[in-house]
Length: 281
Image (cartoon, helix red, strand yellow):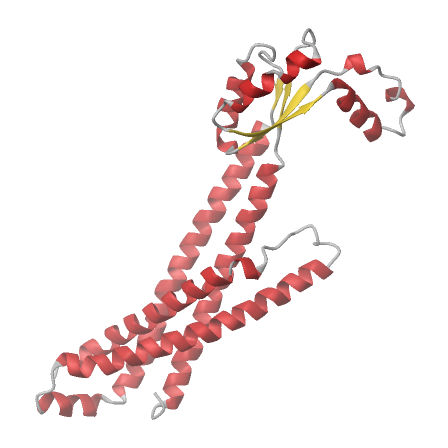
């Protein structure tokens, strides 16, 4: 590695660049998925209770709602609470301030485990006696939009990461091929004096392993610094401060493992690919 320092430096530099590109796309995908999950969590359904039921009878329906498999959380809202929230929202409009509490119905705010089953869950809620058909407010079109965005983002990121990984292996293989080409005479001499393919191959594989490992370590800390810089910029910008980026500390173990595995796999794979043709003497 040190006797061919420039080629080793080039191999590490290219691998670090490829890891940073793959890591950046992956972290963008993680943050996009986290934001979509937050948006999904805020997409509640409202189940309105029949006016004929008292508050005690209405509260008794909570147990039936929680028995529905896709329901994660149920919050009861009395007609008084609903009226107070409505008046607070339209406090500047005198027209809505005089509405009596009786005009508002008891209701449940229902959080779902998976908005992909919103239509089915809505039908199950409407089947409960005391709520009835047409008494559930659900943003089904918005939910379908969230699911579409999530699926498209996942597919695009997976394809990009796969393509970049293949390109990385190709680049590092060709970089190590240049190193190996510089040693072709040494390899030929070793073959002629009886060295086995394994004896010749393993030093190159070990070198590729170390190059990949060094690249992973450098790439990890550069990715960490880059991510924190972007996170600080987003937090300081008033126009985009609504975006909550996932703290890198929550992901650093997984990022480190993935970088180490990818770096070593790229290095070893590139070395095996590079040395193969020079063993044919």
